Image (cartoon, rainbow, N blue to C red; front, top):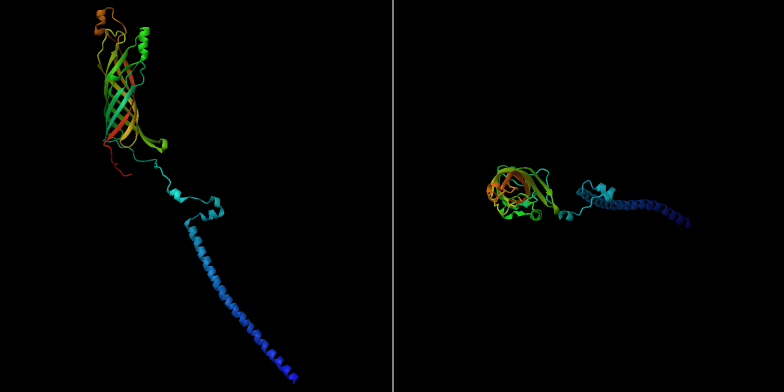
Length: 314
């Protein structure tokens, strides 16, 4: 009986082992399947994140084309700009190599009040105010007139007075009353330069010449007790040049040098032998001498009308 029971238990054990062995792989396979599903889900999510990250990185690289590789290889070489600071930076006026003429003068009038003074006469000076008026036929050619007033401002040097008093030696001197001339002006030079504090100054250079008259008379220094000269008009020619320094399109400073050439009649350095002859005005005058009065002029230039229009747009 005992042997039968043992045999049944052994058969039962043998029959149950294949069931357990076959059931275990099913559980493992199910678990693997669940794990695979979970892994697929995780890897999918992770892949999605990586995809999003990749798209973000790609978007960043698209914002700075060509700079990503440089910044990755050498961060020090990567450009670093403060765009807010760049946006508020003060940009000065752009200067073009070829641009429109700053001031158009054709068809405009130019008034020039100025002050003139003598440069080449060490014995007597002839300062005085002057006024010029020009009409610009073209942008570089003008016709005009100018006049100078000298009479109230002529001054004899202290050297002459001391020499006459100490050595009884006199030098023939001449004083001027006024002068006037018709002139042609030619302005072939136009340019610009940068001054202090980034100030951009426009300028032009011009030449001028003309013909007119000047009123002069000798200063009686040889025989002042008997001689009294009157002013006489002399034909004069002038030649010179100058520059305009423009503040704007209608106002400028002028710096000009001009030589006035005329045939001057000087005082006679010899005294007549008798008093009667000394009082005769025909004995007062001596030689004629070609005289050049080099005059510097500083003043303002005002163009009218104040504005103008370009024929072609900029």
